[in-house]
Length: 91
Image 1: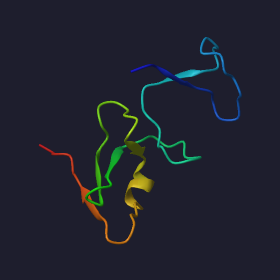
Image 2 (image 1 turned 180 degrees about the vertical axis):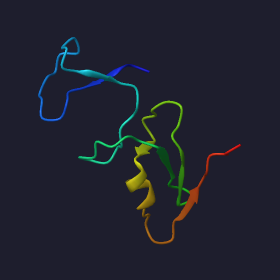
Image 3 (image 1 turned 45 degrees about the horizontal axis):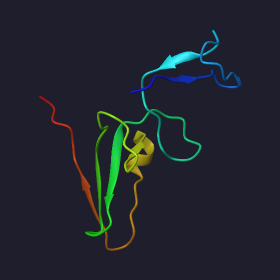
Image 4 (image 1 turned 90 degrees about the vertical axis):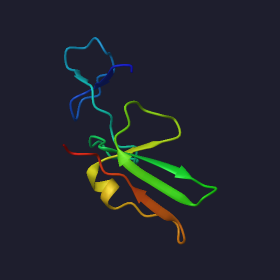
């Protein structure tokens, strides 16, 4: 997975070599204007009218949406759709 660099809040630095940038290994929430760390991955099955929400996938996928805790908790789907929530196993 490529490294992602983020400027400190309020800065507009865009050069990955800039000393004002810090390296980020986490993925961010897919929701517009949300800069929180993603903790869950959402996928849709349009044919079965189902949404699956589970732990953060091992890598970003173009057909999946990474969500932060707040957006995962507030997930809503169209009327008649089924939401399947997968919990991580805790041993």
